[in-house]
Amino acid sequence: MPTTDQISFSLKAYQQIHPDLSQGEAYEVEEAAFSNLKSPPNEATIPHLGGSLQLGLSENGLPLLLDLYDPASGPLLVAGDGGGGKTTFLQSLAQSSSDFQDPGEVQFGVLTPFPEEWSALEALPNCMGIWPAFHAAARHFLSQLVSWADVLPGTRQIILILFDGLDLLTTSGFQGQHDLRWLLTYGPRRHVWPVVTVNPGRLPRLDTWLDYFPTRVLGRVKRPQTANLLLSDPQIKLAELSPGRQYGLSRPEGWLKFQLPSVCKKESLKTGIL
Image: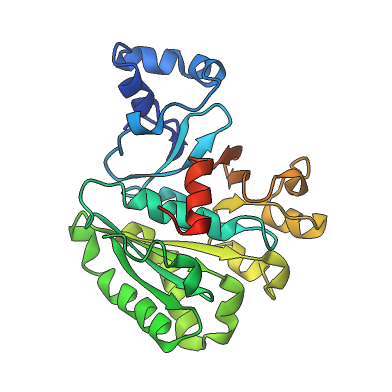
């Protein structure tokens, strides 16, 4: 898949919308494509590319994709103040993962303090389960993922672990923390992808976790001191992001603003109507 980096705009998807565009021309018109496409393309015209999970749409309307068979980006941290859209982002990923042609290719499990918020997605064919984050079953799920990580690299199967509330992990006991740290370190290269949300103002010693996450999805953060912990560029104002609508992707390569694939899809997740 031709991309500018591991998480990137999909020029291949753009070519599929415009099949008359040749491979060589795709690179030549890259900047023009970004600047000229003013509205998001019809989502129905963008098929899932093999192993690519859609994170959202850039401000120019092009899809932002994560290649699940390339572990270079590492696990994803989703950080922001309360009400900033962290859970909505996780739910959007779960919905996007269900769009793969084979429901067994990408499966997801959820650890959350509020399982009722996920009831609309529990019936998806690729959902492994929704567990209360403080329950023993959640720790068992983490332990199972560590075991499965030994065999998954020999398959095409991918598992997303959507952990909604890293700040709750401090009460989960030593083994749960050990297993999650192991999955953060080795998971993506073994087909297990942790995507972890955190309210950075509520997690003691946030800095001890940040090194696990070179790639971060950031929502609104009002406190400048906290925002400075999450990204190195003081010119980026996380407090100006619209909560639940705008996000920023922070990578070693730079910063990129985006939104979820569809406002309608976001609203259906909130109401439970899919």
